[in-house]
Amino acid sequence: MLTIIHHKFLADKLKITSWEVLEPYFSQLVNREINSKAELETWLKHRSELEAFVSEDLAWRYVRMTCDTNNKTLEEAYLFFVSEIEPQISPITDALNKKLIACPFVAELDQQKYFIYLRGLKKEIELFREENIPLMAQIAAESQKYGSILGSMSVEMEGKELTLQQAANYLKSTDRNLREEAFKKINEKRAAHTEELDNLFDTLIKLRHQVALNAGFANFRDYMFAAMGRFDYTPKDCFNFHEAIQKQVLPLVKDFNLKRQAALGFTLRPWDMEVDVENKPALEPFTSGADLLEKTIKCFAKVDDYFAYCIKTMDDMNRLDLESRKGKAPGGYNYPMAETNVPFIFMNAASSTRDVETMVHEGGHAVHSFLSKDLELSSFKNCPSEVAELASMSMELISYEGQDEFYPDPNDFKRAKEEHLEGIIKILPWIATIDKFQHWIYENPTHTAQERKEYWMKLSKDFGTGTVNWEGYEHFQAYTWQKQLHLFEVPFYYIEYGMAQLGALSVWRNYLGNKAKAIEQYKSALSLGYTKSIGEIYETAGIKFDFSEEYIKSLMEFVSSELKK
Image 1 (cartoon, rainbow, N blue to C red):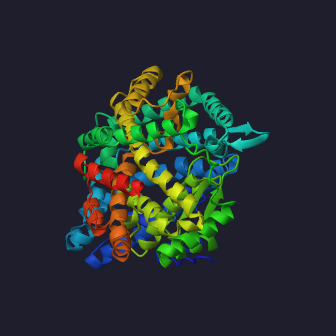
Image 2: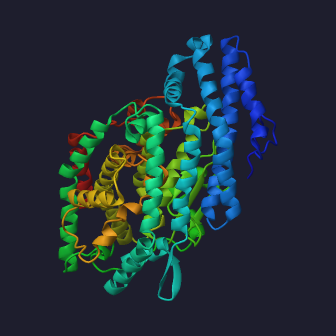
Image 3: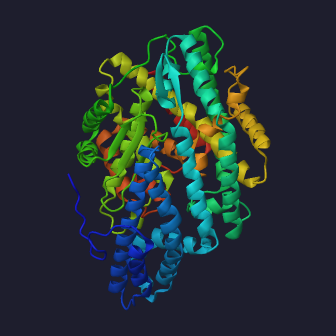
């Protein structure tokens, strides 16, 4: 299936081979006279068409590079865009923003419809600095090195060369010696690159701090709160969230670990945290990328036919790359495509239960892209992470309805569900740790690598349970933060997972009470894109945007009661 785009403003067969190809379109928008509300609305649509085209071009360059990090041509195509095209676009974007805000016909626009959009543009104008353009290009070029470094790593297990994702499956093995061997090999491979990653991170911190200073901020944290449009909460709210996690969630995690220790019959080591406590072999919910895809479509169809349609359409259009292989960047993502409105799912599946969670998570993001595709301007679809992650994390939970496709044996499904729900609780302290770490990093931009390591170890203790013995492997623990891609590539994008997780649990709680109503509210909320505030979108989904201690406590009680069932 091909999507044929008919442009109204751009030439139909336009290709970005140089800045000179794009420049006339941007100049036309900058210089066009706007003499009425109707002309302004046409101008907005033409600008949206251009931005969507440029955005999708960049998206494909990123996707192709991450699918094959060994291909220098693909890397160069991406770097060409971030170093040659984006720096040219930045000042013109600022000029277009100023032209729009200064236009007298803005007052005649539907203020409800355009409120969020115009609020964001005003913030962009405040933040823009010409001297940050080359720094942003440098940051983009530096941060992509993380994927190349991680993508090159492999280890040998039982005579087979495996990616780190594939080798991690051995951490679920019932053979404790094999688990320990996998743990050591994976972490020794990472340890060989800790200095390289430390140096890369130091470079990124320095560049980011300079961007913040140039824009008139004391530090990069404060700059990012403005740049990410965090209009709905403050750093103080984040600190309160960290404390609430310590008080309400850590005791549950400690309880899980003590039960695990009692069931296994020995002191827990880092390689004992994923094995089944009854020593059952790891579940293998699918056999290949094709099997994962087929089962996901059937799973989604049991929840809502439209969800299955979205994934089938992506398959028809070759918008999926699911299996782990050497040379592929780490992690998983759903990359929205602003022009064709059919996103791309990238992941590193290795036949684990975690892969099922990743697939339905990214599938939730994909459904979000489909539901918001008819919004008038591409900017209306650019959701903040607190909303985007609500879409994906809710899907992880409501898709339980169809996950017997992966786990036909009810006992296997019960086991996978229990593992997932416990995982939701266990991930919250990690989210708080990573977020608190980022606040400290950018509030103290001149810190040394040694000070960073010491602070990470302090946080690991504060948000740990004291139930896992790392003796002899503290040097591995001191660099576990380097596993978190977000720190290198998308700074400050992480606490949103925690906020959205709370929202997703509320969506699921509603779903258990009234499936049809919860699905309708979920779809209505996602269809809004970013045309309403975060609070209003959550309200449309039938839930609250709340991460207070009281709210977290009520949700932890809900999950605990579901686990007891």
